[in-house]
Image (cartoon, rainbow over all chains, first blue to last red; front, side, top):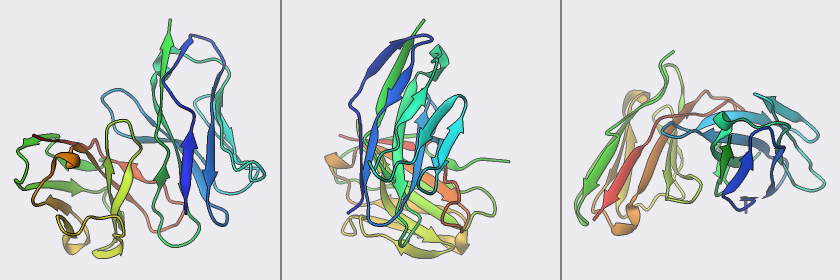
Length: 113
Length: 114
């Protein structure tokens, strides 16, 4: 079946530190991959996406590359800010059937000034 | 552009009671989703509509959960009777028809079953 595994949280970093949140997936075929973010008190919003192997999604200084050989989609940012504190969800959309999203369990990120 | 609207934002009920949640998707979006997000977990799809037809309800507990989408616009999710394990945030999302169209999420309804 389809599943997503994220690194365990919570993750706490200092401002300007380098961020990596690991995400690996299991799927048949070639799914689309997403990172969603949930800021405190707000709804889920799309951060970035990639729809085929070797694609790189990027937004707000965050990047993730679709790696088919390692079935991974790790989220990175070179210099985090306090405003990046949120819960981050990795998700996939299977190529077959409906457009549904299958989410990982989420990683809570806290950035200290 | 208005986002996905949901109501109520919070609901507290006793077990075995019934409850209903409402969702108004982004105008023009053909596809509507209901997800259940239990504390500490990622959202799990309960049901997906394309216009007013059901595309996927494989993970909907049909003995107690029901959903409808009247006229292909608003949707209602109902739980009857509620159990303690139904305590969660219920998220509504909408998107266009394309497989890679972005899903836009509403703020969610936080349900507590006592």
